[in-house]
Length: 376
Image (cartoon, rainbow, N blue to C red; front, side, top):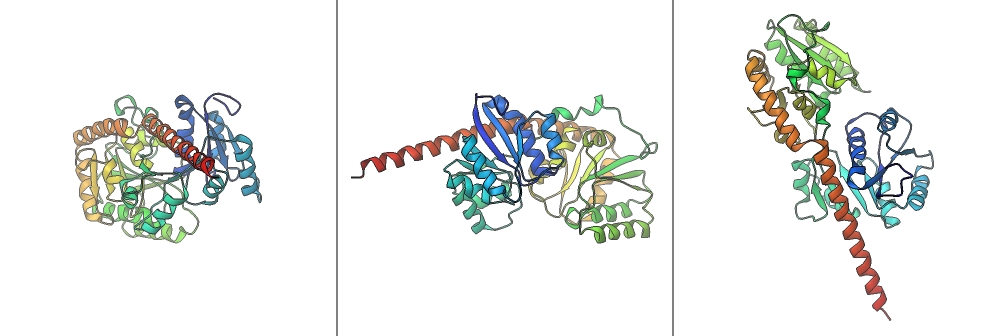
């Protein structure tokens, strides 16, 4: 379906960003599959950005809101397109939810962010929207007893990550003979825990392990990057770590690695963990957000407490020194991610939730109209 295609229900997506971070990418993956479930997507972007190229490649209709008139532009599109439902993809912007409610268009709020213990905040989110989509059990626990909330884990395109047997292991400039490659993917900032991996590497110094770091340094994190670099130099590890910078060829990088390390101090739903599992890698992660549900401890990888570099070193060496264990865990990981986190499963659940929200809204309208008709 295209934007001009008259068939199917219309869903209007609002993306808070136009970059290639987790939430916008999850939105694009979902939008591409919704036509198969009877929904015609139109994505609204706040500004030009690299997400446009992905939308064009996938032939998904999109618009860029005009600044400084974004709110008026959004209201105009709502009135003109008359979507069956609006999907607001982040808590970063609340005004699209209020605008949709103003025009009485069913609206769902997709919560990708970490909410901590903010029960009052959860109550407000539930009150102002027609439906709330939560991606983790931790988030969902705040919405206990709230009927408009549903937990739908994000999904990934598992077919993009071939089985390990079919993907040649890339030696390249980063891997020496017989080295085990431990991969870190993510921004280089304090809450992501790269320094914890560096401390674990110091305990494993002299072992045949190569550490690849794929991720950029966001603004304000340069001091943390300097701290990591200083630590590596002080412990003679600078030659063991290869910094690749921000990368978009994640499937290729995963195909050349043996283990994914995700040492984060805080997270909600790290897609990179699922991507590694789909590529057949065991994951050593921390017990934050949805990671303990993604990774079955001691079966598809290991789940540790954040900041425990000694435990991290033990588990990394256990995997590095046992190729058969890596293969078994990687194979189990692929089965799990396909069963629970495939994007097709995600899209089907999302479309079913849209149907429910639209039906409830329509029933409420009819009841309201009926009551108004009874008034003298």
